[in-house]
Image (cartoon, rainbow, N blue to C red; front, top):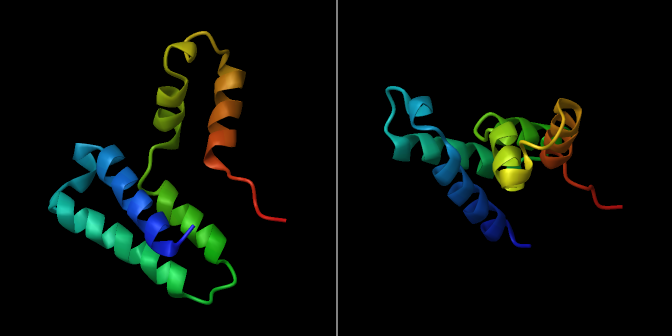
Length: 98
């Protein structure tokens, strides 16, 4: 997947999922641009911890537990607290290439 696709997907996700209250005094467009700029800077960097930094940048913007709940939809209510916690944990990680 190209970097442009990844950034576009991330930007769209951020735009759709950032709660309105998070923008505080900033314009929502400026907020989104700042996050996209941060991700682009990380993609260009040669940092050894780039993957961890990307995860931190994305988790600062996205509400992973809310996304996991929405992904399960009506099945969320039937899950135990332990199952919910595990699903959120698994949803927040992605397989790493071999």
